[in-house]
Image (cartoon, rainbow, N blue to C red; front, side):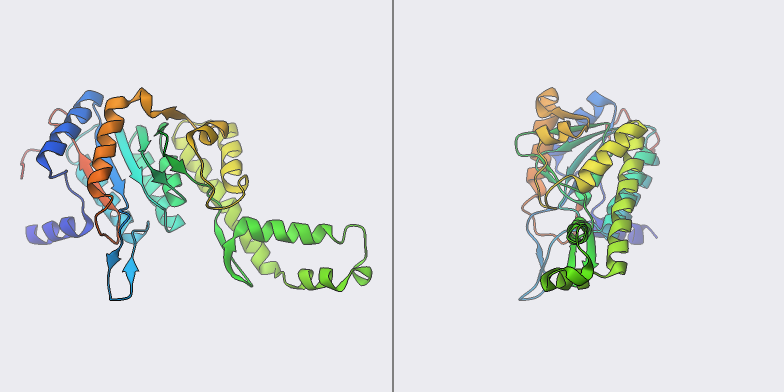
Length: 299
């Protein structure tokens, strides 16, 4: 049984940080804040699985299992309710990002999220778990507009809805019979089911965001305003949300200068893994001995 558990632990990359020098530095941060430290890092180098195919880390089922395992291990060792959370992720499956964010919010009362570089798409949803989000000059969040199916393939749900509204306005002042052929051709391209699905996915995403934000200490008015802006208020899915833009939309963002020691330490933690080759996120956690109150047997 022990061998099976050890194998699973190795596969999903859940463990205390095993670099002794880095571990000592991180342990001091854990002790200073009376908190658990956790990292969720997607390396930038994909894993080559065939001569022609490389797989990059994306938020998905293995990450769900890894974070759940990490939370379970943490809760067997400490009653700490504060988490310092390093996020570096391009996102992935929305449902996985939502489930992970929800699990973290339920497991910890206070979360401070550090985004040294990128927390995009589903990674942004993870960042929203923070009662505070710490960002710097290269930090990036992104819009959370879901992707939807259309006749052209997979596109932004916002694009489907906006395009339909645009075509609809073409007929505001003219009957269909009197409209130019080009107008009719555009109108014929839209499928009512696609439009309905796009609207539903936008509403669902806003609901996910509101739930996570409420757990992070935002009031209902703030939740609705922020969720609408982050889902529907940007030009494209790839738009960079800087620290300034994040503050403008109402997120509780602070400058890295408020946490200089922690910021530098988390950047070092990220640097250790960012250029490794991997097809999944690397999950790590650190608990200081002072907070490691439940564990009786050490490896």
